[in-house]
Amino acid sequence: MSMDIALLHAVVEVAKAGGFREAARVTGSNASRLSDAVRRAEQQLGIRLFHRTTRTVVLTEAGRALIDRLLPAMNEVDAALDALNRYRNTPGGTLRLNVPVSAARLVLPALVPEFLRRYPDIQLEIVAESNVQDVFRDGCDAGIRYDERLEQDVVAIPIGPRIQRFAAAASPAYLDVHGRPAHPRDLIQHQCLRGRFASGVMPPWEFEREGERLSVEVKGPLVVSVGGAVDLALGTAIAGTGIIYLFEEWLRPAIDSGQLEAILQPWWLSFSGLYLYYNDRRLIPAPLQAFIDFVREANGAL
Image (cartoon, rainbow, N blue to C red; front, side):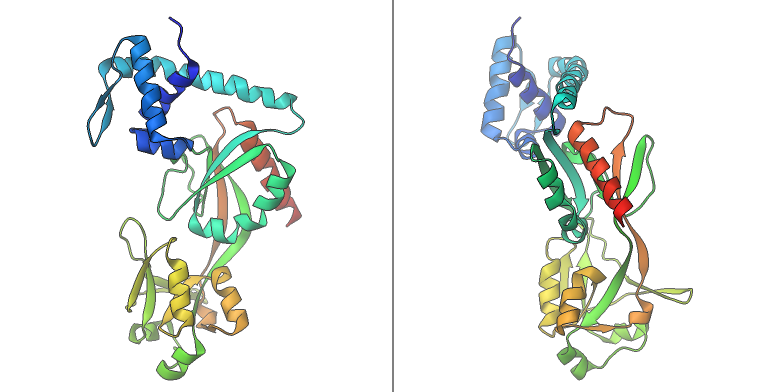
């Protein structure tokens, strides 16, 4: 039976993503195009591969049997094609990274332009989210996270500054009216601009000084999603509405310009920097290997 491999790829991507829209988002394709490809594959095979409703797309028994055999074969095909990169002057292909929004804002801008200049045949896709635990979600090749707790077969290498801090600040106008807190507990009496993770967790503000560490449950007039709406909180703080608590590097331009005034600086909490995570038991795609080598080179220059 002759079958266009592009149709089989469409079947695999829809099965992995669990739907046409999600598969289109992951692959950068079009949902209707994927749906048409799956329909044509089913016509050529003479059997239904997916049960479709208005809300779900689920593999049939025949579809599951096909995917169980097809997925390893497709991985081998992708690996064989990727191996051709060694014969190129520069590696090419797509590299997908799953990163926190803070990494996209504070760390990657110092790396990405030079990486893309050096490897013009690589297309870099960044999936920036605030609360994702699985770094390989959405078909990503690697991920960037703060915590160095490693899963089995996963390697972590440092990326970006090794020490970062959380900072607290407010506009001089706000502090002139409401007073300048001398201790983190004073924040309980202030208007604070808070963040909430996608999980619904609204973390307390944590501080540390000379071995003493404490958490403060603050309140205030504004809550934003961590990541997507942080700039709104920053603008609101600059406008004089309340106190903001965020990565120091995110606040630094406003502090240096005088739009914000740093407060409680002896209590600012330091923490270790980001790590690039990848699975070294899988065949590492050439674009990912190029990025790993690039990050290691950058680390050596620090």
